[in-house]
Image (cartoon, rainbow, N blue to C red; front, side, top):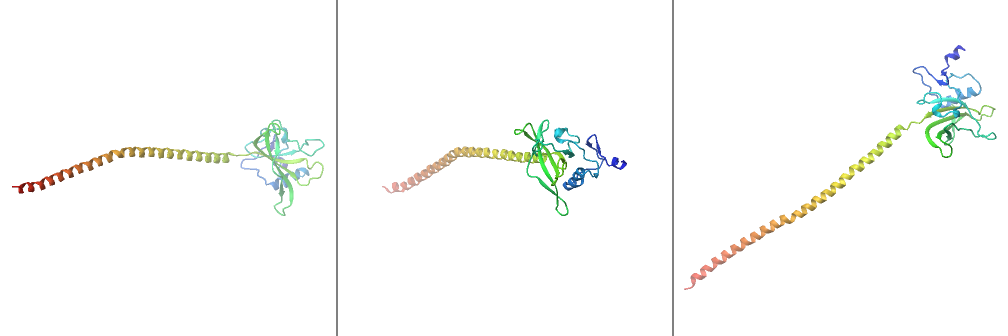
Length: 242
C-alpha cells in the first residue's frame, strides 16, 4: 500500500507529476502497459491515468492542464440499446471520428495489440456542427471479445496547435501582397516615362526649327557670296568696252 501511494500521481482526477517528469508514452505502451492491465485488473506501472467519462464533459472542462496532452481511462456508452455505435455527445457538441482506425503493433514481432481511432470535436449538433482544434485518440484492445473488455478505452485528448501553419500562411500572403505592391509602381513609372518621352518629342520641333533656321542662314550667306562673285565677274567686262 505504501508503495502504491508513492506511485500515485493523480490528485482530484488531475495528473500531477514531480518537477522535471514528463509522461510521453508510445502507442504500444498505452495499450499494453496501461489499457490491457486496466481491463484485466492487473497492477499498473503507475497510478497516473485517471478514470473520467470523457463524453460527460466538454474537452476544455476535463481535469488537467489544457496546454498539455491529457490521458483518461473511460468507458464507451452505447448510442442505442440494440446497436454497437458509441454515444459521443457532450454538453456543447460531439466527437466525430475521422479517417480509418490505425493498428497498434508491437515493436518486436509486429503483433497487433490494439486499435487507435482519431476523433475531432465539433460544437453544436450534427450534422451542422463547427469543427474545432480539439483532437482525441481513442485506444481500444484488439479483438476484445470478453464482456466488459470492449467498454474500456484509453483516451488521449489535446488541443491541436496551428500557430506554425497559420504563421507560414500569413507570411506567404504577406509576400504575395508585397510583390503585388512592388509591381504596381513599376507600371506607373513606365507610364511616367512614356509621358516624359512624349514631352521630349514635343520639344523636338523646336530644336529642328533652330537647325532649319541655321540652314536658312547658311543658304542666305552662300547667296551673298554668289552675288559678290557675280558682280566681280561683271567688272572686267565693263572695262573692255571702249
